[in-house]
Length: 227
Image 1 (tube, rainbow, N blue to C red):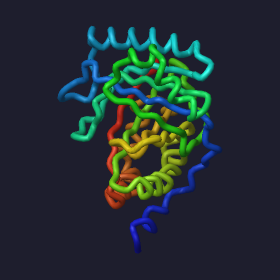
Image 2: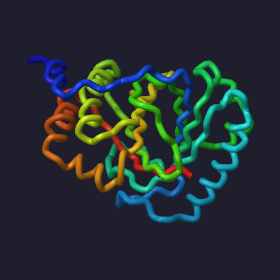
Image 3: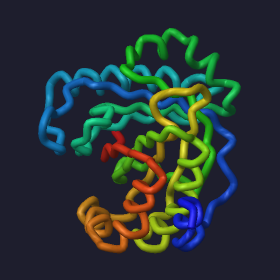
Image 4: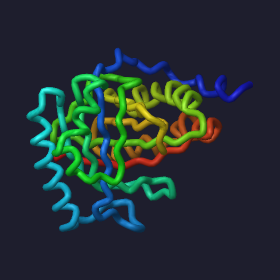
């Protein structure tokens, strides 16, 4: 049995039509923790968050910008492949073709992000609710074959909906080659503790984790709160 055949064991994901927007995903290493997963308070991070909020307000005045959201990390997966972003900004534009004009603005160039990814939505379940009360997961996927990684994601996305009760997923595919084949934004359906409980279940290891290793896909997660 081939690897691709082995991955098709979860319920199908209830995908909806992809969003027509463009996305600018920005990552900042303001003051990330070095050894522990949980992110402590930091005056340096507060200053970066404040600057990002000021700049996103300027961008939101542009006709090309639909939303611009600043996130502060509350936990970063301890991994050698983790980007260690403790501040994230996600900008949603009217279309992917509007990305370049937004990037050329003075406000955008003042961000000084450590990482910028221009992207489009390539898979979607539900509509991401970005209300400030939510908790969000950003997964950064790595693989030597982007198509293979996407087939893997399709094969396990149903597990998150049926087993972890996740309804809101947006998969962002980069417009240009970069370190990540895609970044997945997930709004957690309940508390972080409840979500982690599902990840500790043996079914997760069989249905998701083992298939990840079989398909040579890696990921690093960052848990965030929007400002």
